[in-house]
Amino acid sequence: MSKIEETVSVLETKINKVLDKQELLKQANLKLQQELQSTQSMLQAHKATIVTWEEKYEALKIANSMLGSDENKRETKLKINTLIREIDHCIAQLSD
Image (cartoon, rainbow, N blue to C red; front, side, top):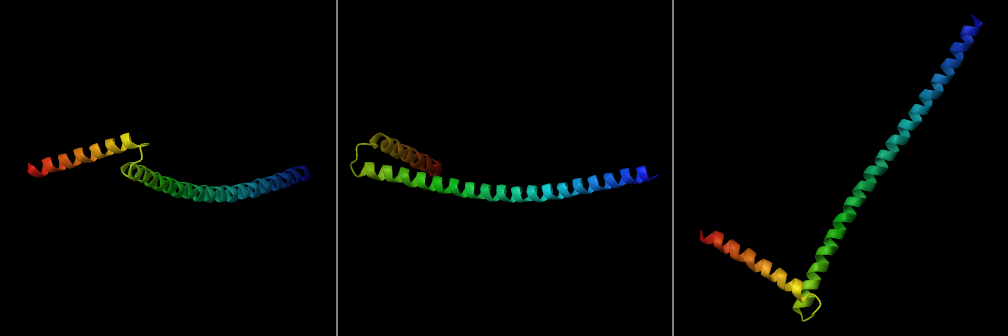
């Protein structure tokens, strides 16, 4: 019987160690999930900032072209033509 009791005791010890390790892994996993969520929200904020700066850059390029810069004249003309077509489309819809 002592052999069986010893085996049971060893098994209990091993099971307790496994359960402790499982709990530690759960806590580590939770911490990693929180870090991931935080990092993802930071990434979204950075993406939004990048989009804002890209829009500002495009607006500055167009404004610069309108002020006489030759660098982006073609893009500015295309943008103006697109805006004119959109306005014409709106006028056409209003007149129907």
